[in-house]
Amino acid sequence: MDKMREQFADLNKGSIEAALSFAQVSMESAERLMRLQLEAAKAFIAEQSETAKALSDAKDPQAMMDLRSKLAEQSVERLLGYSRNIYEVAAQSQKDFAKVFSQRFSGYQQEATSSLEKMIKAAPGGSDAAAAAITSTIAATQSAMDSLTKAARQAAELADANVKAVSDAATGAFRGTKKK
Image (cartoon, rainbow, N blue to C red; front, side):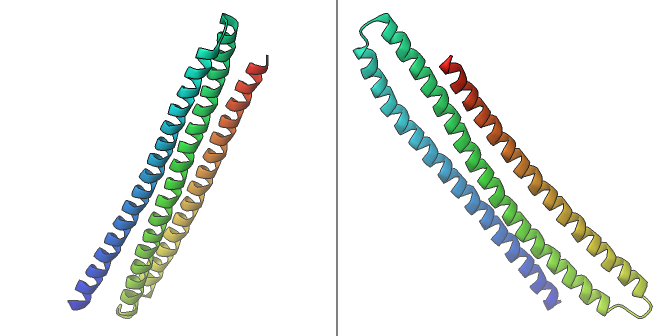
């Protein structure tokens, strides 16, 4: 009975550690986003001050139109850069969450495997077939989870590459249209 309580306490301890790790990743992600937003706000205020000065210096309608085009271009480039930065924070957070989840799942898996191995050793004679079936099932499950984890990682990398490619293409397309 004491062994059962000890195992339950270990399980709770692991769950608490995982929850704290998730909370820490969440706070770090929120901090990065807040820092990004603060930097964007500071840049916006500085740019608006420069814009106001540039508009006051414009002498004729053509100068104002040229300035308007330049400001629109800068706004789109800033927006693309800001969205790219937000995506990078989100992608990093996803990687951090996946790492914590993977570590915790691995811990649960090791605990389950250890418990089953102890149970198999304590099993009565003649239960070798059942023990082999359980061991085979555990190995198959572990292999399947490894494959799923690898596939999820590859999908995330592909999505990351696609987002970067689309962002670069949008930036290039915008720059191409402004030269015309």
